[in-house]
Length: 530
Image (cartoon, rainbow, N blue to C red; front, side, top):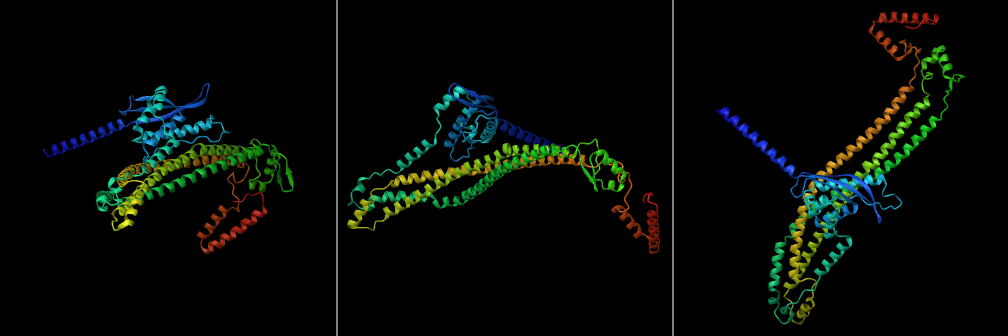
């Protein structure tokens, strides 16, 4: 019974695990969203010429009215969705767009420029689809799903907020917040007692100051300052990596041009080889091989042996140099088109995040400024020690205020709510972006390392093949026939080992034998040394 109970518990546990995995998979399927930019094409009309980018969307989310969509969008429409999201979610990290071409001398319809822009827009779509809040926005859903006519109607009904309109709205907001406070009849009478005029107002201010909690808000300042410093450090490093990569790519292009010029110079080398043998000159390879066969001492050097059927040495080096030039040009192009845009995109994303953090700091400064203003107003109203004419003059003088006390209390509470909400959003966004940043940085470094590794492998392969072809091939050489030079290091090492292993008496006999052998070798030169 005990064994059956244990088996039943195992079955229940496995069933629960399977149900959890099914629930997880269903939840992942419900959140599935894949957005990719597949290609671009040039459109020419009577009035303008532009480029459209084709987007394919596959999803299983319930807020989408379907599972597969194919739409075409212009770059200005990408700017529209980005500005709408940045205006609707000021505390979220909206991914940046690739920059426009500011240099009019270049062709903005060239293949290289459009390929780079397509890559940047694809990165923007990938980041936007991975964001849980931005991808569920109605504007983003309309951007992903609506066809051209319907999308243009939706775009006209929901215009983007430009920089000028944003500045005007901020100006109107600030002007409305600095209106003159209305003066109540009780405060207009200078002879009325001050306690009756300011009792309710001071009580309201005291309650507001007790609910504000400005001391707790000061503790968040160091936390977000740390985030800002870390982001500024990453922004600086990414910008320096982008500049260094661009500099290296430019230098590699010059190096590739130098290798090509070197290969052309080597290809112009005359085919006949001229080799000096002492005081004589050998004009061709056949005479060189005959002289090397006759002179064994020269053949032992192995530097002047050359086969007539082999390619000339300059052509071999020119071939290797041309391979290195091609590899260098490919490396420069890879760094310029793949690695450099990634570091620039990382720096642009970090700059947009820094703008969000700066906006949060400005909002916090507005909050603290309002709190200080509220404290000063409360202290001025609670000061009832002034009497007589001076008191009435001072009350009439302080009758004009930029904002009333009730407006200050309302603005302070509203700013506190905004700062608290912004802090929560930025914490979540920064944690998510930190993980995404780490993954993208590792991928960029891995891709850059693989690019350099492939380059050095190609360069080493080209020079290795050149060295293999340049090696001498003298078949009549004694070292290649297994005959060793008596002065070689290996023979001397073997003889020293034999002499050290013999006794003292044997060493002397062995030395005499060596002397006799050397005399015999000098007497008969035709006998090869053993």
